[in-house]
Image 1 (cartoon, rainbow, N blue to C red):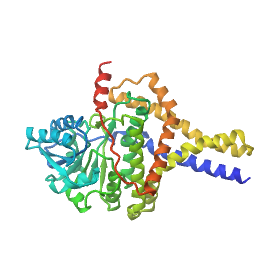
Image 2 (cartoon, rainbow, N blue to C red; image 1 turned 30 degrees about the horizontal axis):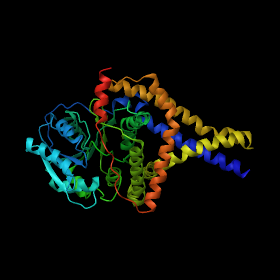
Image 3 (cartoon, rainbow, N blue to C red; image 1 turned 45 degrees about the vertical axis):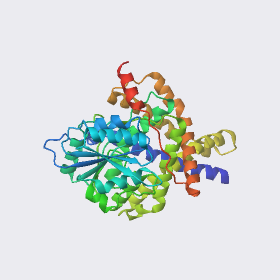
Image 4 (spheres, rainbow, N blue to C red; image 1 turned 90 degrees about the horizontal axis):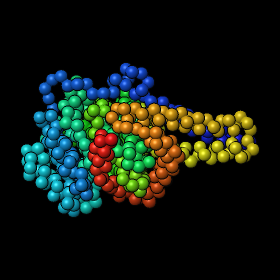
Length: 420
């Protein structure tokens, strides 16, 4: 009897958790009006703001030059690029300094002399040197659209926003079985989920293509130098301070990136994100949010990686209990409810993959849909492993930054797909 009650309680909790997550994930697709409202408005006036674009780069000599070249193609007339490199990274520094010599009016190089290196420390090193009205953050492998700054400028001036979050999209879905799911995660997160968060007044910002008024950023004392999810932390603190965040996703304007090139690299990246979310949760800045609903959303969002990992393990266990143990028929039926939401989610992901390919002009084949479905359980195992590893690292005080390497796969995959 006790086992049956426990199984039913866990199953109902998992069902509602999955249902809420799926509903939020579908936010942008609920009505045509909602979907249309997620894009940038086209600029209809001259530029009015200046930008300082921060480009932290560590061991990124393979991709940095291309990223700087793309940023220099911007149609906006008032911006500077500040590349932040470590004092112990001569290869990346050489690429950055060559770019600065070629265009000294646009490109500057700042050296991060911290003994222990990470992204927020690099960003804080550059912040006092920013001359622009707006600080923008990009990663060293980013492929940035030339018209993005003009659209962001227009978004700031027409909405009065303190923060504008642009879209980021992993693009090389051909690279591996897990890159399919990685690309879709970004597609759903930036295309839909972040818009819901902005609407609700609580938003964990994305790691790049995020723009903040310089005065607001300095008032917030920049980024938390010890947090492994400095983007999420900044979004939580600015949300708690009542700052206005505008989110825009336009497939023509997104910043294109690549998926991690190995499973171990992906595991380490997810571990860092999960541990960072846990750090933000434990800091409790989210408790300063003005409404109970916002605080509940914050609590749920920051704990989602662990709930997701937990559900990935528990759903198969529930099915085994229902099939092989002696539980009442009613309880057995309830144990399958989380599996129903999982199946609905799979259907939504298949439709989402089709939409993703259509928006980006990428050829999605039947084999890709098979990989998406078959790879789902294995991907859940990876997410569960990353969550467990994050908790273990946090408990042991292991806060070192595990760097994600980049090889430019999003560039080669795009060219190869276009030639097919």
